[in-house]
Amino acid sequence: MPSRLSEPDALAPDQAADGAVERETMLFHRRRMTPSAARSFVAETLARWGRTERLDDIRLCTSELATNAVLHGAPAGGRILVRVELHVGVLRVEVHDAGNGTPVEREARSTDSGGRGLFLVSAVTDHWGVEERRGPGKCVRAAFHLGPDSPQGDIP
Image (cartoon, rainbow, N blue to C red):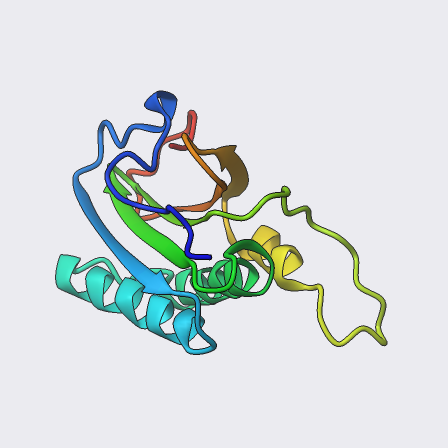
């Protein structure tokens, strides 16, 4: 059954993108190639904006969050929403899915073949977290300080 994941009502009122200087959003179908497509979408968006500092970290996190959404979040036939927002000194990447549950960072055993995604996200972002959405699912976000004018306060 397809998810009802959609734009623009995907965000709860307290998640509004106020203060964003630039913003791009794309919906992806739940497919094996979605993490790669999401990674390319984010990299191309950042290149267009001329903000490619920390690009490797941002691409890694986008891939990990999209992979989690494909494997654990979006139901069969569902979609995943990827949003990139540039604020003053901060870049925020969000991956929305219609799945239940809240992802948590865990410590994978050395013999595990997976389970390190959020550990990697935690290691390379300045902040990450999970937020509820209006309607089904959740938003997993990662934030990255960019440039010398990075804010010292709250990260959007």
